[in-house]
Length: 241
Length: 241
DNA sequence: ATGCCAAGTTGATCAAGGTCAACAACCTAG
DNA sequence: CTAGGTTGTTGACCTTGATCAACTTGGCAT
Image 1 (cartoon, each protein chain N blue to C red):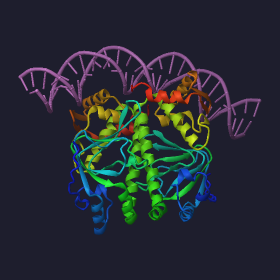
Image 2: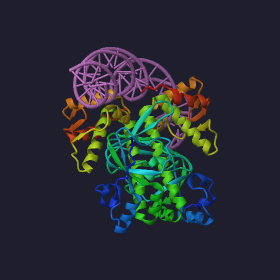
Image 3: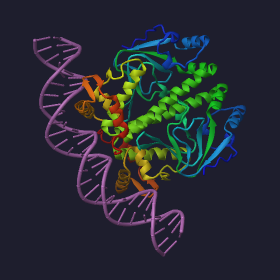
Image 4: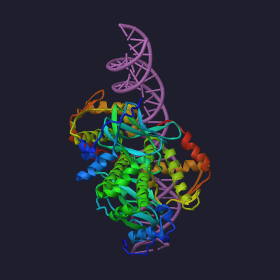
């Protein structure tokens, strides 16, 4: 199902450039990058870019669509660890052992740009800006994960849901989409898994926030009615748990 | 309190080398590394190497002692995100924004080797092995964090405690210490924070595992009486939560 | 259409773990 | 030695969110 069609891909032409690449590359450097990222791949909804245990060869920039990553433990359990939208880079978990430690699955028909990692390392020796950028992208993932731990370890259900929605909102906004009006690409169950909650709890929390007038939910369509108040609920709410 | 004493530090002589550095560096490369890591710093118990908001300049390899990192949210909440023991590297959260996002605090009198990050980037251009190693270390942190999320999101209290103890055990073993007999360096509260539990729950779980004969706990001294069974409990236990 | 399945909502009940409180053991300072 | 603070243990009780179950809705295949 996964097409390995090579689409023309030129970072130098891409409107996601500012999200993927360091700013201020020269013409020459940009064309080096173009030659590095020479393959684009279509991933159908439900298909994986890579799975846990797959040999690591590349990292992937989301060009179009939406992904989740999920880890599975020995027993049947699995947990969504992240969602990725266009301009975000995934697959860096594979570097350490040359093997991926999670599955990366498309939530809708999507496209990724394939960045062969060892070539990236080679190029980043020639372009220090590129090296630094790579390090920042990796570090950003570490910081994000720390925030995630904070959320899972220290927030109650309602706060987690709010934090999740505000995070999505902010990422949509950064891409020029409406910050307060968007469609979820994932199911309640996937949200629950990501937030360490059961799908029923996610559903109930949505309903509850809607009753409060803070949110409008219609299936996957979300409208934030009072983002300011939601933010406040996050930072003030019970010191509890 | 924090002494900025410069101790002699020579990676080429260090017995933690195999944990910190890539294998197979040449003499010449090793002496380059020696000149990079020229400062060692003593950190007294309770003191911080860096705090959230501090400008990022370096990463730190634990030479001796024990650290925790903790993030704090706007409101008073804080959460321990990691513990570090000798040979482990901390501070990489600072790369992305040139600012640290957590506090790194010594749990006992400790020593760290200071690795100026921009110089490390410079050197890793000259030593590809070094660059690759850096990427692996960062990636390892990402993988570790994913496991942490899994734990916080999908495991029940008892499993978290077991996973925590087994993880410590394995890291002690990797350093040549007894795998089944060690002292905790952190309080029950710190363990609880790390595991997303209250200190009472940690305490009760210890007691419970002790009743089961799986563990011996005497204050901070832990003895794993049946590591095999503990491992089994982790992978089999309730699909629940 | 019709039947089916996945996704979502809502209610009733239950249990894991949080909260509050009392107390013990230990450490340090005076 | 004594006082006071920190750390840990244990008990009683309560809250949050999980579990189980019924039902609705919409999409898709026949």
